[in-house]
Image (cartoon, rainbow, N blue to C red; front, side, top):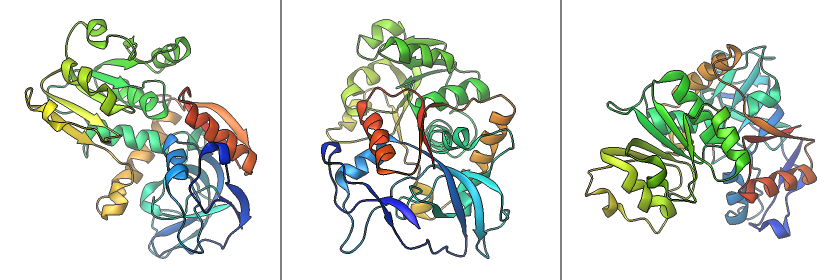
Length: 327
């Protein structure tokens, strides 16, 4: 089959992802084999391209957010049938969905309602799961006492869906950060009650404390003002904890720190079925009009050219919503 693949880590200027022939996926007992119809693009995939090389004689296939049609089911993949329209993520340790077909654990997949297009469905999985687990952890609601939530990066994929989940599933007052007029407008459209500029004086713009901060990007650089705006015993949910990071900043206010990595359940081998249930609920919410898909850019074709365009957008730092490739 055809897949977009590369062998050595490389920068955007030396883009080397190519459409090539690869072996058909070999599904495991609990897998679905899915014909890929649409792929969601995430900044993390560009970071992997820059830093991860394939092993000797191997290649890397990116893409862990997709929508498609079930082509085959493993003997332990219950609840699905050939021909089902599905959306899902995947496993960071296996080949991704930048290919004609992908083998994926059925527990991180959900059926698509008829109301969803493949493009809309592919815009949801990573953002929904990341936002849900960062905000609600392994439950379905915010920690006790949380009423004011600040989403850093409210116009991105995770931020867009986090804002919507908060407004549709909780009574929280939601504040988003955005620095450009277009991104501020988008964050407000997602349902934010207040939009502030994270490049300016955030504490002054807020005029008070918040109970929880969801930081989708630049956590280390924002940490000073984040700890200032959080109330004592408040919560920080962060997606990108990288050095330098000083946990001592949390001690004076007895703050709680929550990290989130969407693939942790599969990698750790614990509770993966919860992700399928979350995706199924999100798909129903979209069909019912309670959540809205976040596609803003659609590229067409499984080609090196569309891959490069997608990575260029991902690395720009100026994307709003979600870029999707229709295969």
